[in-house]
Length: 317
Image 1: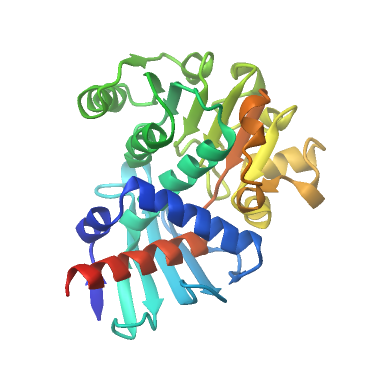
Image 2: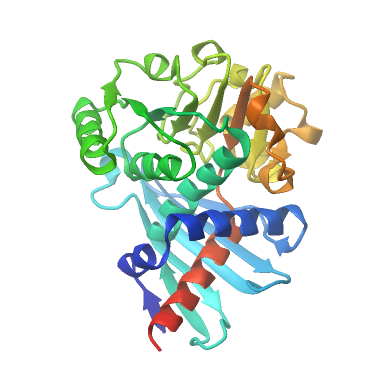
């Protein structure tokens, strides 16, 4: 069996290609070209769980079966990478019958790229003030992803661990060449921002509607399973909600479920799926708050993994 490790994945995918793959994956989902049941979650010890995500892409250049199986370890349980596992791709032309691709790298890249795609579609063209909540790998990936689609000039950051927050700030300054403000609270970090990215494993809300400025775009990706919640449910009041998949967020997002139960969101039309958004980008200039809630889709993993295999095969000729 061919195995493509995390180094191979990161070397073969760049920002521009990842943005295009995100668009392809979301449009495949939005047009009904994917058969993907809801993710199965198996809970282990405290702060540990396993997700299993099978799918079949029915048509197009990425057609075929695939399955992601990933173990997630958070907080003190994470002694190494937070995500470990494989995406199994079946019957890719020119490759062995089954190919395994590192799930940690695929998840990191496709998650940040999904936020970049939503930001490209929804955020104001000149949005330049970025807030990052969280200090892990996704925090760093999101800084780079936002830089790839908007002219970021300043970053405010907040994290629960002061040491990790300082290290993130130093990394942003040295790697991204951006000025950084380390904030004492999540509310302080977001209060005057154009773009807000939530990448934490918070168990209770760290942002309410009153914390957000009148005009901004929010990417909320950290809370992708029941038991985790970054956003208070009132954040959906007077906001435009966009999702990677309405059915998935209704099953896995605590804040969306609570907002539906409280009548803030309509369960029949909880949000607009990002793959169905017209390409005219009309929301960019209308102001207000746009919010992209993502819990992750198998179709993203399959599209990204098949492309990695193809890039690897082409480079090995």
